[in-house]
Amino acid sequence: MAHIAIPQISTPKSNFTDGDMIPIDGYALPNSTINIFLVNNYGNIQNSTQVMSNSTGYFNTSLGIPSHVIGGAWTLFAISGDSNFAMQLMVNFHGSNTPPFHSPGGFLPLKQFKLGIKPRYVQCRSDLHLIIKSEDGSPACVKPDAVSILYLRGWSIGPVHGDIIFVIKPNTSGKIYVKYANQLSDIDAQLNTRLYDGSTGHEIQTTNLKVSVLPPVVLHNENLTATYYLTSQNNTAIYWLQVTSCDFVPISVQSDSSQIHLSDLQNVMMSWKCPRPFVQYHITGTDGVDAVYVNDTG
Image: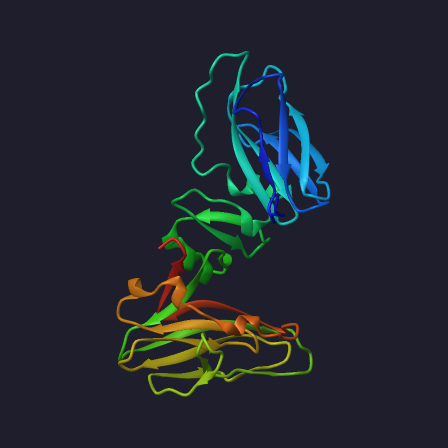
């Protein structure tokens, strides 16, 4: 069997009774460690084990279901490195069928996080979207229309499966407010207004979107909020504004933001090799510019 990058597990059946042993077979990367958790329908771990895959990636083990437990739809989680896999089992109390417990989309993000799943791999309900909290790096699942709001408030560092694009209508003016923190004790940080083509990584000279910034510099050991002033012309386009030496923000001149898709947001600059950033930034607000969440689910 070909090597695969994520753990896969299977059981000989999908219905068990409290007190049963669950035989588990699976595949992962060769000679890797796999942690397996048996979780009840309230998100509580009932049993766990650790197993090593062999040189082909195969592994097998078993987990016992405790006796006298509340039945329902339980979950087996397999975690290996940054990857994880989940499958559902029905656990019956003393052989009698228990109605399944339907928690939409599985467990709460904090439960998944505590199981050892990396924040960016946490799964949300189908109507919610994954963001990462600024405070502690933990995951949260929120409604799509809250993604950009929570980012601007500083509550999150942004979405995992998507991006926030700043949209200005043609022939209008607007502002973007950016909070900076210069951690260097002896070097000032010069702010610039360069625009780039995300598909080529080349700087663009255009009259279609004019950008200026005040103040133009963040002094050493200084925290401040800079204002970027935007003036747009007629042509629909997407640009990437350089806000630090290695950070770029997508800006679109567009009358209808629903026409922007994630596939439009190419950014080859993300592959640039950059030194450790000493200037931190966060966009805190806009005026005449819409912060639009664009995701990969349409």
